[in-house]
Every structure is written in C-alpha cells, then in structure tokens.
Length: 472
Image 1 (cartoon, rainbow, N blue to C red):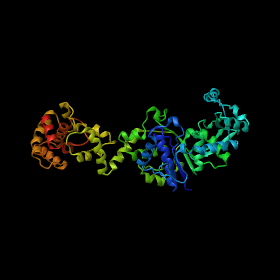
Image 2 (image 1 turned 120 degrees about the vertical axis):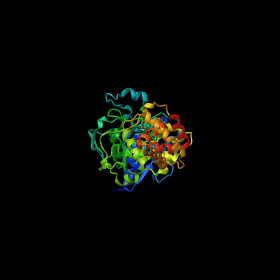
Image 3 (image 1 turned 30 degrees about the vertical axis):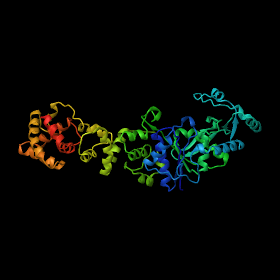
Image 4 (image 1 turned 60 degrees about the vertical axis):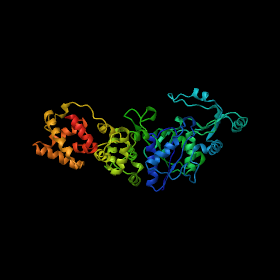
C-alpha cells in the first residue's frame, strides 16, 4: 500500500526536536512505500499563533531535504492545507455529527464546565445540555444564543484499537471526556479538525506522541459515526531530557534552530533524531536521508522513551563534519572565522587543520582563538617529559629556529616541517625538542588543533616570526 502521511504542526514558534522526529517518521513511512507526504498547518488555536512560525516550518523541512508532495505553498487536490482556511468544512461536519447522534449542542459557559471537572479525581463534565431535545437546541441557536458542539460518549465497556508500536490497546469508555469539538467562535478543536482533515485528505497513517493514545477512542467514535475508516496509528514515545524530564521547548531545551545555531549540521541532527526511538536492526548509525527512505520500517519503533544524548549528537556531528567535501567545510568555517579573526591568515590552511579535529562549527572559535590573540602563558609550559624539553632547551630551540624560518621562502606546512626537522638534526636535538617549543610559542597552549608547522602555515611568516621573537 502506498501510504499518505501528513505532518500537521501548529505555527507556535521554533521546531521542537520531538516535532521534527514526528515529521521525519511520517515522511519515511510515506517514502518507504512510494507514497505521499503532506504538509498541513494546524492554526486553529489562534491564541498560540506566532508570526513567522509557518516560515520556520517550511525552512526547517526544506533545510533537511524533507520536501512535501502537497501543502499550503504548492497546493494539491485535497486543499486548502491551512486549517483556518477550512472553517466552513469543520462547521458543516460538526453540525452533521450532531444530526448523526455523535455530538450535541451545549450552552453552558466555560466556567460552569470547569467547576464540575476535576482532573486529579478523574471527574468529567456531565453536560446537562446533552438532554436538550435537538429541535429546542436549534431554536436557541437561531435566537443567537452562544453554543459549542460537544462530543457524545454513548458507549460503555472497553474501546479497543491497534497501534503499530504498542499493539492492541484497550481503554475504558468511562475514562473519556465529552470534549468540545467546535468552539463558540466557530473554530474547531484539534480533536475534531484532525479527524475531518485526515479523512478528507485520505491519510492512511497517523504518527503522533503516545500522550494521544488515551484520546484515540474519541477519534474513532467520530470516524464510526460518519462511517469512515480510521487510519493506521503509530504512536511514538516521548523524547526525554533525562530519565525523569521530557525534552520541552517550554523548559528551554534546544530546538532544531538552536542546535543549528550551536554549530550542528542539519543532516547530522536529522540522522541523530531518526535513531531516537527507532532501531535499524544493524550496527550502522550514519544514514543519509535517501538510505533511511529505503530501509525505514515503523515496526522497529521502540515503545520506550528515548533520551536525547548531546554527547552522542556531538560525536555524530563530528562524523558529518569530517565527511564534508573540503570546499563545503571551508565555506562554513569561513563564516565562523569572520566572527573572531581580524588578522590576515591562511584560512584554507586553518580549515585543513580544523576539519578532522572539531565536532561542531562552534568549536572553531574555542580551539582557534589563539590565532587572533596569543594568550599569556607561563614558561613552565615548555617543560614536557615526553618531548624531553625544559625552559632552557625550549629557548635554545626557538633561537635556532628563528634564523632558519627567516630564510625560508616557501611558507607551506611541508616546507616548514622539513625546515624545523633540519634545525633539530643539525643541532643534535630530537624533532620534538624543536617542534614542541615552537608550537607553544605560537599558541600559548598545551593542547592545540595542529602541530607547529601547521600553525605557522596558518599564521603566515610575519606573525610566526613576531611570536617566536616575543617568546625568546
């Protein structure tokens, strides 16, 4: 079967990691079956609407290569694809549902409903309006009385349905609330609009968080009242910050945009979140989107919550950085250099040094800050047992290296390395006894992203000589 899936986000801000994972699983279910991936904007909660958030949704999906087959910007035969443009449809179907006995008109105020409810005690609102004869309710509406449309839960016993991840599920009908389907302002609630849209758009699979499992029987009652076939359900466990706390944008946890801002590559983020709750069944961890499209199987989604491990993401991002074509990495790195380097350097040489050694683009400034400003350092840094250096040997080596470097015309990493090796050989020193002090003099750091010759090649001749003279 060719699947038709939909990603239906609310435009309420940045793209949360959990939302992007839902979109990815929807996309992969569609593409692995040769089906269609639909983008639908659920903007019926006008209070939470954030200006510009729809563009963030478009940009995020495009950035990671998850192109949709139908949506608000490109259209399709099941449009419109923005819920606020479909209001007459929801109103029509809500009134139809009342006629079919699946819902009723309610004239109670929100305060009256809230007074009866007690979530902790599991006390549901018992709507007195449910007993109002339909003709009487219609007359009151005709007279201008405000109303909402509430769902009828008329069944007793257990509701049963199948989920791809959790198997067969049973929920007691007594636990279900007769919630509002159409608000007094004519806007539908999520619980109603998504059912109507999924049916009218021929959606075959619905992926959503497992917090919606308990509401699924309510959706199925709506499908049943209209004589529609429910979709295949794929409920996914939450993404957790740790064992106790779920990842949440309300708690300031990183969104997709935050991670990109912190120097993570979009495709590395996508690869990582694919594995947050899904197991490919092999030891492979690095996947392109095209590879995922071929092998994804929703039956391998885990029931257990997945913990967002930033250390693992850093490792994976490092793999992606190292795999980039050099020109691509250099282009990204240059944007970072512009933020902290003002002196003339060999930027290409710096990128060659950094690409195998950084895990995020933001690491660049952290490890290469010495290029702009040489830190103040203690001469004790020259003491290194492994390199067989002390302060005296270091000063001697720097004094020997300076004239050799002054004479050097070909200022490349290879020439510099050979030059410094020759200084060591000609003066009865080990290579490390020359290379190590030069590296310390040029960087002021014990640990650096490159060796003495690499860093000298980056700094250029003038700055290299200046720093060595300063160290002597």
